[in-house]
Image 1 (tube, rainbow, N blue to C red):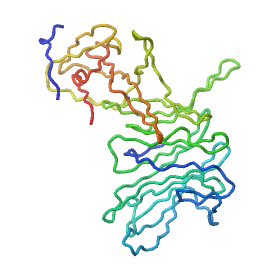
Image 2: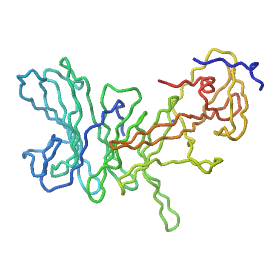
Image 3: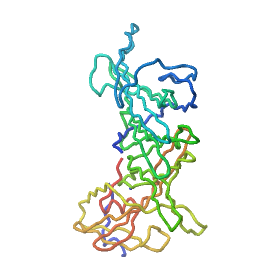
Image 4: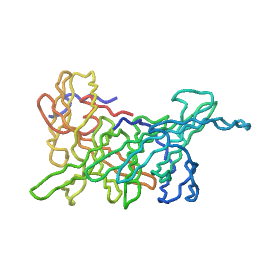
Length: 361
């Protein structure tokens, strides 16, 4: 709800990925050893070896029945799904998803991801994760899934894993995890990334030729970040050599106390306007996305006014913790609009509501 302001009262923003609330899985990256490791164990002993067997076809499933539990615990079928093989950095890897299916159920819905391995061509486990799969009243109360997508850029190549669990909070995305080759070994590229939004595209760095010189720009992930009003496309730089992720765009502005970081102007997507029933209101319109430049103009908004949403200005936030990186937006959202031919910037919640933009959630 918002108050109506009358003119007379004034002095004139690979693959398709699932989105959900992500539990932080237990992760470990295991040094490459000549001996094979046992898949499906949280603590992997380098001396252990896998039983000899024929490798299943890529992206295949194998099902085995677990023993009956006399204690009354749930009975599961073990379902193994192999994704790949994937070759990058001169090495070959396969993603092995170990799923659980409740006995007596069929189809995809009863499947729950229990653990995930990345193995090399010899079958050695190089990375292992485990996921919760609790059961109540004969059903999973939480189920996770994973997708693995190869990505190839101008500076490196690797795998992008998207693991998600349901039930999930609205618009929660990730974690997304990139793996590549660092110093000759399979390694995570940065920490798992999660955001209120969706995975966009992986964009290889542009290659520019300038005479005898060649410039190769960094590879980037594009995250469709939800601001509460619409989506903006936020760029995340992938540093293959150092094994790191970072925001690709920073915008600095002059203040009375020197330079300070502010929001960056970005294209917006998914805008939905819901104009109110009032016949007349107004917005405070600035010539720039900065209240310090001078007083705003008061622009009348009629019920039949032509309102165009041109761009957004958003300060992306980057919160890096021990287990992952949270990507979000600061509260102050600026929107560039054109109202009956008059163009400028607005940003308060009341002004955004005056043109029919309401914060979701």
